[in-house]
Image 1 (cartoon, one colour):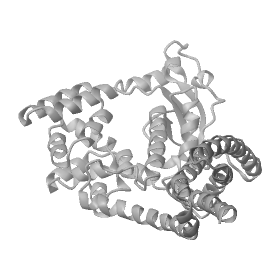
Image 2: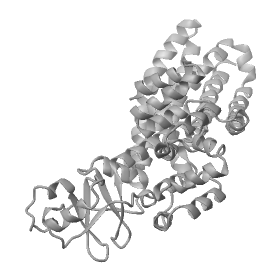
Image 3: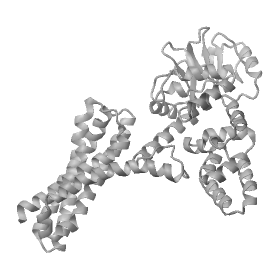
Amino acid sequence: MEQDISQVISQISAAPLEQQDALFNLAEKELDDGAIALILESQPIEKRIHLWRSLSLNHSVDVLTEMRSDARYSIIQSLSSIELDLVLSRLDNADLIEWADYLPDEIVQKALSLIDEQEIELYDQANEYNDEEIGRYAERKMWVLAKSLRVRHALRLISRDPSNTQPTIYLVDKHGTYYATLATHKLLNAPLDAPVLSLADQEQPALQADLGLLEASELIEHAEYDCLPIVNEHNRLIGQISVRLGMSIIREEYETTLMARAGLSESEDLFAPVIDSAKKRAVWLGINLVTAIFASITIGLFEDVISEVVALAVLMPIVASMGGIAGSQTLTLMIRAMALNQVSAGNLISLIKNECGIGALNGLLWALVIGLLAGLWFQSPMIGAIIALAICINIITAALFGVLIPMVLDKLKLDPALAGSVVLTTVTDVVGFFAFLGTATMLIL
């Protein structure tokens, strides 16, 4: 699929203007909505809007929902009042939940005035949960049957909607309390007089609606069914989570973490306006400048020894780089473990000991290698010993703070993925330079 998308993007970009619509419409017939969304996001904004307008009405809204929020909004901003009303009127509750966090309130209110009452009711139910809870994103359109039915009655009810291909049915009592999960295919070969409850999996637990997104996604990833039920605090069925939704949540979480390390959001548009993007990135550059100043101040404290021994200036980047890489390895491991709730007060000390042990072994190994090379390079055993000591100290420090920094940031309600790498880089730079230049000052001057 990725190769197909790449080829389509290349073909559209290289084709004359009069042929681009035809190529895009051909792709619309062959690719799913998610792939079409990626193609649109790869185009400059004016061309993106033009191509989106060429989509069939049935696909246009679904493609917008699949797009990242910034790219989606670039199209919504371009719509006339009539076009916007037409788009908003075709939203369902799930679409509106996906859109609402990234749209101005007036557009959300306009959408609520255009969609039908049933969708509004489902939308309100979703808003009872915050954006970190699976209940907010539960798919509320599903097959639900009374647990007291027999197979013949269940088949009759299902046959009324032949377009529905739900693989899973949920059995509830008259109050909507969840009882069991039933694979739809089991009804087809079952005796007509058999109770549906006898065919169902009564051991399949439901997910609590206040469960975190990643936890819920992990559970559906390893489940026997394509969908799992979601219940509220009273065990009443409110919706389901599908494998597709679970994988989408995991992908978005990965993208969010990846982008956050550069100070960007997961919704960042590839062709966002230059001024808007420059403003967003300027803030992150300013933060990095402040941290870099701390490292520079540390270097400035040892100006005399650097001016006396030029080799120190040549070797300083090695000290900083080794500490930075070692720290980022631990930090990445910690962020993943924290996202999966694998880190607690009970195992924190053991985790610190383990990472510091790894840091000590790698520190000693690479201290010997780099110390030997530096000593031979500058014909000075003293220089080799100084950088070896600094490398060892910095790698162990990086391992220690790679564990502690994300924990502290999490306690302060700050995103470890966003701020962790900046703080860690500052720590390893300052500690590394201080150990390297401080030792050199004591032994050389």
